Image (cartoon, rainbow, N blue to C red):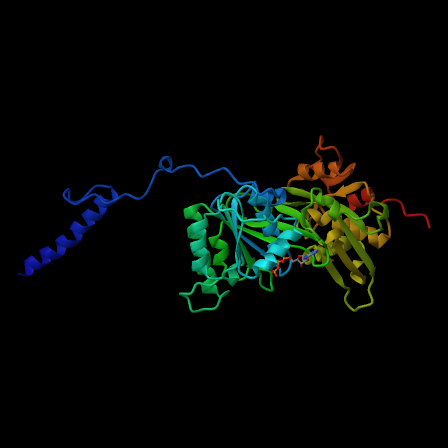
Length: 448
Ligand SMILES: Nc1ncnc2c1ncn2[C@@H]1O[C@H](COP(=O)(O)OP(=O)(O)OP(=O)(O)O)[C@@H](O)[C@H]1O
Ligand SMILES: [Mg+2]
């Protein structure tokens, strides 16, 4: 009796182990057992991704998406209140509606408000509505997710704009619209339908006080592309950036300008960030920043003046604060300027955020110029990262930067040693230390 039990115990695990191994090898343990359905595929069994992107007609928008709208993708657009998210997407919808049926789900505004904006953007209102759904804009002022899904299934638009995800609600959930559960559920439901029916969803998402997109972080993981629309409240230009893109490079930049007829594309954005060349004051220096693959010529301005505070003031607009303090310390220690007794203010013209280290040498030259009350040669662009030892370090995409400078009429560039490229249209003068750049950049003192 005892032996029998032992035998049973011994057989049971070994037989199941055999079954598992056989299953792993794709063989059936028992030939009479029906074969299990294999779900995995080889790459050759999978059809190619539909490469044909839909051009929106807004080339700056297409550029940020990586070359047009990908069918069936989910794009989340975040931005501060009133920055122009609805205007951007309605204008995109207008340009697309000539060729495709587009659904605009207005969850925050009335139909009349959208119509008014449409007319402000120069959109035409057809005299009679047509029965055939081949193109045109369809408006749905609705917040109920199920109604929206039903309409998407019935209309089958090419692109749907959801303005905004925080205003939608799914009635099966008890939480309020905009809550984490609601936002997550609504986005997942829209994503399933987008992939199933190949409808591109352009979704507006509000941002929280600290600038991140409201709702759970999972929202950003769920969607294919996250775009950020930003701009200075007091300036008319707006920047569109890709923060995440499953179909293209991130950190691509699109530049728009808010005018009374809506958002216009800016074809030569560098002009926005360059000050008046005729009025190049001591403390101005020009750099070439790179946003994604887009080079931008930007003027920096510095003001250095004796401090009347126990500890000197430092302030930046459009630059990294920590990099400024680092550059000031390098100039004090390696060049011998007594900057700890001076206030320093540095800003970028047009308020563009230039966070990259390639701006360091330009910042340093602007500070030295203001300190010595001398003018930096306005024909120069200055490119280079500054190390703590006062050395000038190489930067990425130097060729692209120099070509952009040449396009805008600059003749000479100060660049890090080893990156003195020829054939870009500007003369590149290589420097290895900050102190060497000073003599090359500063012009003779203006006559009194
Ligand atoms: N007639 C006009 N002329 C110039 N600019 C205008 C005009 N009407 C609106 N604007 C600009 O458009 C902005 C509002 O745009 P929009 O409603 O698209 O922003 P939004 O980001 O969708 O805002 P919200 O977060 O409230 O939805 C205003 O802040 C204003 O700058
Ligand atoms: Mg809006």
